[in-house]
Length: 114
Image (cartoon, rainbow, N blue to C red; front, side, top):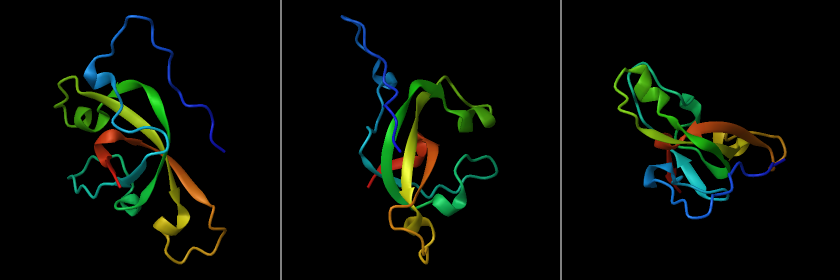
């Protein structure tokens, strides 16, 4: 159920700014970090520590909305990633098909390579 990666065709001679390059790519194995921010956060607690695979990079880059929520965003931009997480990573006693996955968009500050 994966669609095409949302990657624009680069223009000849144009070099992207380093911050406009995604940290992860489709197919990368990732882990959702276990941040414990106070109040304003953008990842469900039940997904923290779960491992999955990047399904696609969502472009263009976006302002970090979590930092924006605290009023301290200095223009930091990053990417959202559509991540596929096996249901068994979320619910250890999941009885459905092993191929069942949850798809969710997560900002890159919440992801690390697994």
